[in-house]
Amino acid sequence: MTASGSNSFVVVANRLPVDLTTTTDGQREWVPSPGGLVAALSPVLESHQGCWVGWPGIIDEAPEAFRTDKGVLLHPVKLGATDFQEFYEGFSNATLWPLYHDLIVTPVYNRDWWDTYREVNLKFAAEVAEVAAEGATVWVQDYQLQLLPGILRQMRPDLTIGFFLHIPFPNADLFRQLPWRDETVRGLLGADLIGFHLESNATNFLDLARSMGLEVEGNAATREIGAKITTNDGREVGVGAFPISIDVASMGTFDDTDAEKIAQMRGELGDPSTIILGIDRLDYTKGILQRLLAFEELLETGAVEPADVTFVQVATPSRERIEQYRVARSKVEEAVGRINGRFGTIAHPVVHYLHRSLPKDELRYYFRMADIMAVTPFKDGMNLVAKEYVACHDDGTGALVLSEFAGAAAELTQASLCNPFDMESVKRSLLNTIQSLQSSPEMMTERMHQLHQQVTEHDVNLWADAFLHCLEESRAHHA
Ligand code: ADQ
Image (cartoon, rainbow, N blue to C red; front, side, top):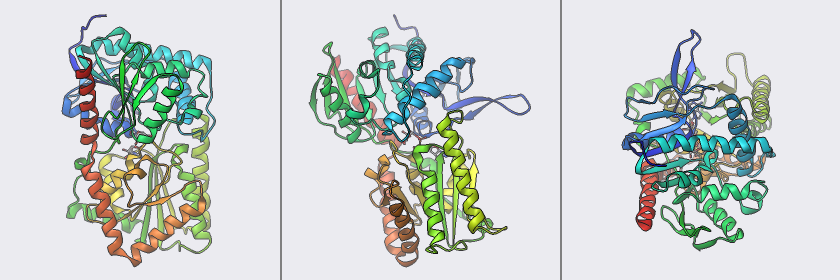
């Protein structure tokens, strides 16, 4: 196939950064789509004025490509109802998501879903091949599109292809459960460079490649091509760790007007001495229920007084048609109701729960207002929420309670780390943090300053620049 497109930099992801939705009065409207991938990639695409290929969030429709006011060309891919059910909800989110998150729920292996996954990857490949200029750089994102690098390599050998996985890569023993493991690895190896968040993820992939008889040279390293895999057709594929981050500048600074707004929000919560905050997509991997149960036990034992500490949980609706997500939501909502029934008063619930997406500007206020951010996933590729919280505390206020199983724990070492599988550990982290903010404010300020410096020095630009630099290096190597 020859090049017909004019875009020299193309990002392809399952979703576009905006979803086409129908408002209550029947109007069509583009709204920001949820999740960490969009948050991280939007500023990168804007700075490259690139083309973003993805699904527009609506069945059976693919509006004409258009340029955003920030200069990004959005190229929608049409998916039908079966694609949505079997590729997105099925294979991506009920097979790969639980498998790659270490089996927090049991993955479903369904042959029809796999066939549709393959077909949809072919569909994305045809769109990319159409928009990409001769010799373009194509950056493929995430677990929904693992076959795309291999298909594109066949269709368009002129392209430089990078792949980045936003979720963890499991250890080889777990991955081997996947009935279509060989095809999946072959798909990934179509890339010139494969990036993971952490060296441990990259090492899992290299171990897997070795176990499949492929030649592996070197070891996983961060922000460099530490290792190379030689494919059966003699190509070299770079592998590296590239910890994703956030656009720190976009979290902004807080002025006096912001301070007034935040004081008003605190007042509306009854001016408690400590506000604990959770902000997550409502996903069973995020440990929302466990952190609520830990809070409930702290109230129950009298370690925490309901009048002193308020819990605010903001949960974005996510994958709501999948059974496990419905179960997760109903358990969370049951716990919120029970805790408020037991410990709240009419005017003052102890847990404030919002099940909706909030604009980024408003989220910033929540982040700044919270004394403690509770991020307690059972497993998370990185977790941008933890970094966003830190970015909003340049003044040294606040504290972060963070799961050891979030990728972010490898970098945010000044957080209070906890094991979400161990209720006592979550309780201890929350309680120690509540107490330390009162008893050792200088130490806590120093910790937050160190966290803030870490996030500021390792922002999303460093992530994207490092990945694209290594991708360029692998292109030069092949030329
Ligand atoms: P996610 O699982 O979506 O991302 P995360 O990294 O925390 O998790 O990103 C969530 C994003 O959504 C954040 O930018 C957050 O501000 C936003 N968000 C959450 N709740 C919101 C709400 N109620 N309203 C508005 N915005 C909300 C996946 C992986 C992660 C990895 C990212 C990026 O699972 O491990 O960090 O991709 O690679």
